[in-house]
Image 1 (cartoon, rainbow, N blue to C red):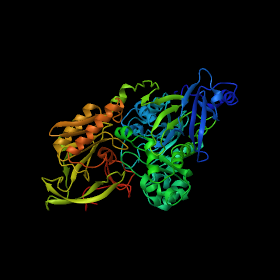
Image 2 (image 1 turned 45 degrees about the vertical axis):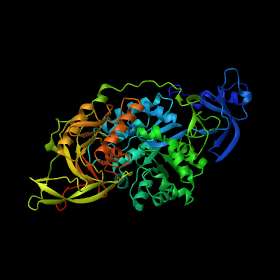
Image 3 (image 1 turned 90 degrees about the vertical axis):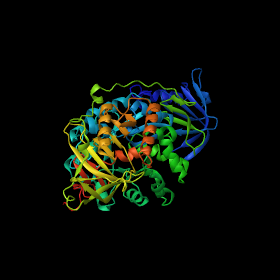
Image 4 (image 1 turned 90 degrees about the horizontal axis):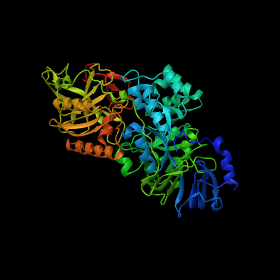
Length: 601
């Protein structure tokens, strides 16, 4: 049942009451399961659940509510679990359209997401947000939108394809299905009273909606200023100590387990070891790619990871359902199984494995016996959504030559280097001594130092910034991506300038996405024609392309897990420590651009 046909409680409350009192028959009844009650934290064996008009009508012994047209689902001692909710995620990171992602998510027991489409907002602004929001409203998956807050993520260090202003947020808060403000990444701006940030937060609070956060700093004074400004959650917590402090200060702690960022193991210790109340702990994915959806799952995987780390299964399910619903103030509709709630229900044989055999959304069976049962309408993006890679001209090898102002006389120079960290959204701050030849700084495969470029792909300005990266392990070839959080300019990295130019030009021809090349040949590519961020192909096709891309990275010498996701974040100047943007090298701790060569300040 899509949002346009989904009934609000006042529209169907009379129907539900009639079913509960026995004067009307149920549409569907789940018989004899063990109910996971997220309100009491208890298990209720031998329980039936009666459903009518897409909502829960009655819980208990409900066989008497069956009529000739009632669909009977025999739980056969399976657990009856509320549909899972992802409290913070970016659909664009799945590389799929909202519709294709919804198919994968529902199959794994996710019945609602709170998506932050700030990736497409950085390319197409409010118009792009509306496309994804509208697509989500026609699906059986409940797609709530948190309206992007920081586009670009910072006004001082980068340039995106679009900008959002306070007026855009004010309008967005009026859209039905918008649940709050997307992650407020510009935490220095919030802390120091930036008028734009203050205006966006005020507009959200005045609309009675939730302000979600992004606070990676260890400064306690800044954290408290951030919370006092109206931001009420954070998903950038990577240590137990950070998590406990945020809970102590009244924040909602979002614990992340995505494809590349594995925070559950450490951060969930606030519950398992520190004994903190879990009522304000939410489980989220943030970023997942296609293989994870197929091989591990979606929110069911995150809940499973919490259980594996010692969390009681019912408590883990609470963190992935009712806690999230309460945070976003939609618990009148979703998050639990109780009279009046939307009938989003999973049947699961083993809570430790968290693999649903049946998924019900709005009272309709959408997944059963390994097959999707729901229909999914086609959403057509406008033609200009597919025209987002706008370069001034084709790139040439000379565009990637890094000039030196210091090394001509000595034959070498010391440079700042961005250090990639496996399975982390953060980068490290390194240095390297590199040779200078003909006035240009040379990369060093021996030191694992590669040339890195960030190219404006939105305005055709020809702007290119150059730097060096370490930690990816490429020995040859080049890679490129138009997925470059958050401004999504064109990122290119390689062992030779010729290969870098080839990779950039070939990716532009595809309309964006990700690519790996070697010896003038394309090893693998994932075309993402929608805004240079999302494919228009089905999940199996994209998963195969991503698998080929991952193998291509290995062929070039990289051994990192999900290297293309780590690479895509190397341009994000709101997470420490050192990043590249289209304007240059950004020191996130100092929140300023710094020169590439040491000793030139």
